[in-house]
Length: 241
Image (cartoon, rainbow, N blue to C red; front, side, top):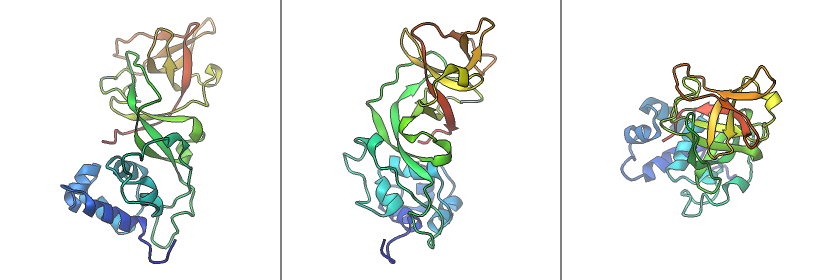
């Protein structure tokens, strides 16, 4: 990287100024769902958190340009194609004195446009991707086996643990029921649909998915033949956009 290449702080500012209708700090901060003071800090070299990076990617920033200064500023029409196969890169989001490649802190993952349910099961397909999402490596031990998915806006059976409209990471490498008792998991049901529940063991040695919300009327789900655990709910994030 050239010595005079823009830092990530400078790239945040460059991208902001390119955004029609929200080029001021006040408007851009509102679009990112942060306050103006935080945005000012990011543009002056303080650490840029992953959800802000992810929001900027959702607004059209090319993640490789934003994180590494590579390629065009905007992703273009094909930016989200083959997101799962995008190279995992090491990045640093600290100060101008630290090279952007020194710390392997974040992974680039697909954000699926479909929604899982924390309530009545919903279908989830793996063919529709909204765009890349930026996930800290500590939250993603199996990046190639991790999905980043919205929770349906009406799903509240897992509140307050998993609020409606949140975004969750589902680790598909963790799918053995014996290892997941007491954990929030994504369950694919034989009759169709995917739902999020807390996995518990029954008195007879079987497994059941139960809601965290004690006031929710949604029934417990007894895992029978044909039902399967897709994976562990690894992390829960506030909705981004």
